[in-house]
Length: 117
Image (cartoon, rainbow, N blue to C red):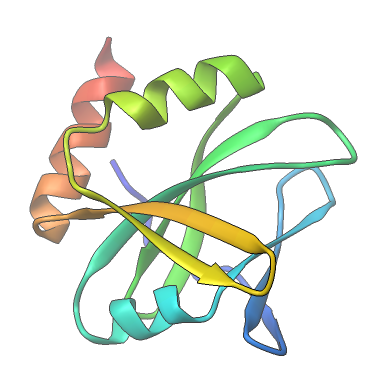
């Protein structure tokens, strides 16, 4: 089940700074928070430079959270297999990729079924 705990974060320019479970921080575009406020649920992959752990994270209207962790290769394969459309946000010299779930129920069902495998 996707948890509903709030994750503390801070804002730096147009990026949200989100602490990771491995005591690092990652950055994602604040635009994803805007999508969350609009009731859209996004999924993205990210990497801790400290630990080398890769994460799958989701954004919801009031929070962003890490739902899976593993090797960079395994999290990339998992992210690529998510069946929803992928979008990108480009700013300065960086491009950020994310996918949008059709609904919270679809997001929850997908990851609950994935965790059962």
